[in-house]
Image (tube, rainbow, N blue to C red):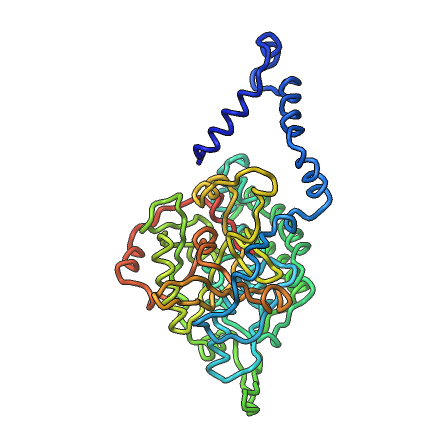
Length: 470
C-alpha cells in the first residue's frame, strides 16, 4: 500500500535525479548508472546527522537503538482474568513449541483435578511418535505421487520438507488421541529431543534417499508384498534412529503423585492411552481452529494439503474469521478458566526483557528515516509475516466496558525469559500478529460452528501462511 506522503517523497527525490539524455541512453534500461549512484550518494551527504546515525547504527545492536523509551512501563503484567497455571516449560533448542503448547493446555486440568503443585507431561514421548508418523506419511506421499516428475512443484515441496520438528494443533491432537500421554518421568527429555537440529537433518537425509527408492519400487513390477516389505524396512531404520536418539517409548508405566496437602497416592499402572483417557478425559476433537488471514474470504472453511502427521489423520483445517469474532470467543474461554492454543508472529515487536508484545516497542522506521507501512494483508502476501511460534493463551485483562486491552501468554522458553516465562500481548499487537487460536466449541456460536459443514477450500502446503510453528 503506497500512501500519498510516500508518493510526494518519491516525486521530490526523482526531481533531484536529473541526468543527461545521452548518458542515460548508454545504460541498459533499469540498470544503475554511475550518475545515478552519485546522485543517491549526494542525498545521504545532505544531512549532517546521517554521519552520526551511521556511526551509531554500524556499531550497535539495531534493536537496542530502536527501543521506544516513551513506551517503557506503559504495559504492565496484571490481568483481571487468568487460568491457573503452575510451572514454565522449556523447549530448549528444538522446534517443539506446538507440542509444549498443546500439553500446556492440558496440564492445568491435571493440576487442578489432583491438586498438584508440580506436574508435567513427557514431551519426548509424543515427539517420538510425531517423528515416526511423519516419516511414514512422507513415504506414503512418495508412493502416491510416484508417477509425477521430480521437478513437479508438489514433489519439490515433498523432498524439501521430508520431516521437521515443527507442527500445529492438528498434529498435536491426532498424535495424543492415537498414542496417549505419559508423565514426564516416564520418558524424560534427552539431549537430542532438546537439540533437534542434527537428528532432524539426518532423518531428512535418510528419508530423501528412501523417497527416491520408494518411487522406483512403486513403479516397478515387483509384487505388492515386496513393496510393503521395502517400506517396512525403511521404517525399521527410522525407528532405530529415533530410539537411539530419544529412547524407546514406554508401553506401560506406573504413576504415583503427592498432592498439595502432602498426601501420596497409591501407585497405579497405565498404558499411555489409559493415562490420557482416565487422567485427562478430554475429547480433542471438540476444539476448533480459527485463523485470521485477511488475504482470504472470512467465514469460510479451509484445509491445507498434507499438513498432518498421520496418514489416517486429518489435514490442518480452519475457519477464517475477523479478529473481533475470534477475540470474543477467546475472552469467553478465558473467563471460563480454559486456556487455548495460540500461534503468532512472535518475533515482531517482542521485548523479551520485559516480556511484552506491543506494536510500539520499537521504532525501526524512525531510526532509519524510512517508513515500514505494510498492513497485515500485505505482510502475508509478501512473506514478511506469518505464524512462527505457538504458546498457550491463559489470561485477559477485561475492562469495565467489556473490552480487552491485553492478553497473557504462557511460553515455553523457560522461566528466565519474559515475565517469569510469560508474555504480555497488547490487543493492538493481537490484531496485527495473531494468526491462529484453537477454542473449545462450547465457547463458539452455533452459526460459526455450522461453517464446519462446508466443503473446505483446499490450499497447497507451500502457501505463505502455513509453515509449522517452532
